[in-house]
Image (tube, rainbow, N blue to C red; front, side, top):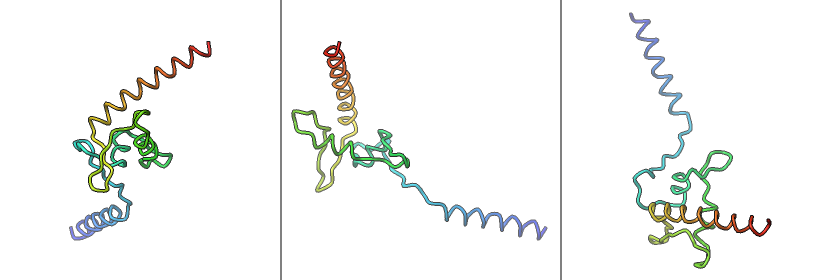
Length: 111
């Protein structure tokens, strides 16, 4: 019995040690967030680089567009840039439609 307990305890301690040494991915809570940071929005929209990290370059570029270029809606909370989930989703739908229409126009000009 004693040998079995020693082995079991050693196994549990080893599992705990391994778990503590493994790098933990940052946990971003976005599912219920009404306002998100650029990183959280990138995670929410699944915008990742080749290493699987959320990338915000596109989001920041879209937010900095001039008013006549349909910028991604955003607000500042203090000095923090934030995006409203519903407004961002609506903008993404409208942006997809704008790109579709633009692409159709380009095809018609070529033909």
